[in-house]
Image 1: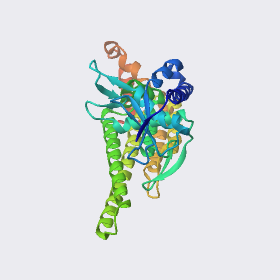
Image 2: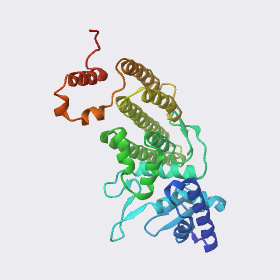
Image 3: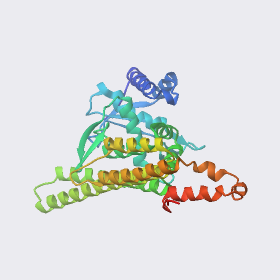
Image 4: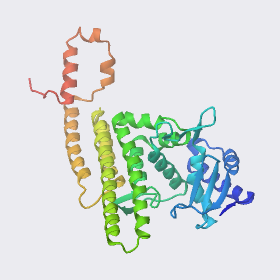
Length: 354
């Protein structure tokens, strides 16, 4: 059964969503009147949705939102918020074909999970959700989206810890590579591609897990089938857990190590120590997880070494040294001193007493 919502209800939903987005993201320059006009033009329907956990779904081919008839329409604006962001982030070619949905590139089929998580993070922020711990797949995860894409949202929150949310949400809304390039600048291209792939694979496994669970619920007393499905569920859960941990550890090791290499003075050291400490509030853990604590201790030792080097030799502005006229530098005795300081600072040679 499909029933179209009346204009009054659609306008009410559009007004509430426009208010939420403008209030939550003033830095993105939303116009409340334009948002209302755009969203109110969407067709909205009540329908039976096959996925019982799905409250609403945006269908881009006919620019319509379908609400699950099994859910109350009292919170329709909350259900529709995620889907309306999908509508707003569409990028089409001259022929009207959808080529990009925020961070999801239709042409390469990359970034689906990354985009879903970014949209859900915006939704959770607009709804004013607070971060709380939730347990999935043997992982205790801090998330402000405990019911929808909790693992993916947790990883994307970690990415945004190093980039800020502005480039993340800007690219989510406008379908460009600003967030991608910003994260690559604080890590590298290989890391971004690996995390993007892992998130897509994680979402694929979660969909498989949902299928296994549904089959198990409808399964008869066939013992062999029950055992087989339970084994598949356990294996898939472990795959999801491993992928999450791999993403998390990759972000920690690459992003913080890059910041370590970029340290120039004592203020940089203090900031990095605080940043590394605060990151504990963004990670997922379980009884066997030790990577962050071990990395933290090793990084603190490295920072102490950096601190000693700066105290002994002073801060070093590499950009000014490198951009200096080499023909002038090489004519002076100072050239040897400068390059020796660079090598000593980087740890290639040890400081000696003369």
